[in-house]
Image (cartoon, rainbow, N blue to C red; front, side, top):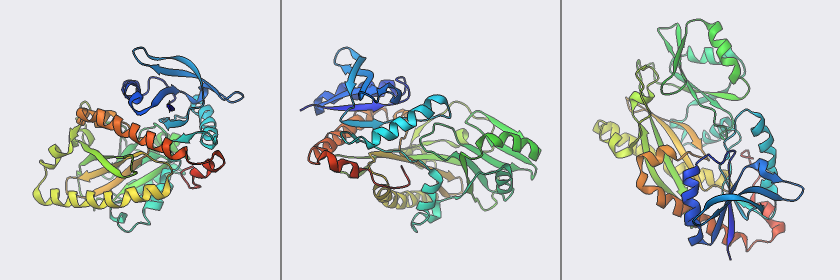
Length: 368
């Protein structure tokens, strides 16, 4: 019997090409794919005015009931659409006749606080604190090292900002790979910082007062197979010229496979990095399983310094795929197959559970 897999996003353009390829492959797994926005749901009738995939035609406008299985790919902004969508998604997660393939992280700072309870991960974790007023940021930057502003909700698409102190007076903010701004007075920082207060937190990366530290960004992409085992789909990096907190020479974002980056390292730094990554991968997936239910995939974002220090800077429960597929374009079909195999196995399990018991599937945790 064919089940329905619903892919929910705030915009049908989000991951459009990947969603199309996934929908094409779904029929081989007895899955029918629909896509919709939370705002397409009409709660009074439980009917969704979304799009249904038809072989040879693609996605077409259609009306359908709430799908058997929902794959949540919503990334929220601080806008009216997101404010309307969130309560609808919360309602859907409690709907007893459907199950979610994945869940999101509602508070990243609390996530890092929980991670610090794991001795094996403590050496890799930055110190975190809530951003309640501009002086929180200014005082932290003046300690030396480097600071990062992150949105509290990991479901938000808001970018992170890197901040450092230069020449004991200039505060440098790297907004993205191409945009860096510099403040010479605290008042300027305070005005800029106000928009982040109350919805962001700070991470402090202590680099032992090293000057001109260069951070290389590493992402580990993990996904669950149909046997509920975590597998690494791949590791990719962004070279230092793209990520340096102190460089103004950034060009277009360039993504490379991990082996290329490893070959550029000194032997002792390479060995240390591989040991650190092995330690992180042996601890984090088990933590994710205990804390989030359900979860099919996540990405670990790491910052690696030119001196060999490694930090965990982010854990994403709804990781983007564009960078991963730039590094490993040949793995797209494997990624799609793994998602669909897991979806099919989840539906097989859910059919054995009575509707009245399904609400127990969603554990009470800080991720809700």
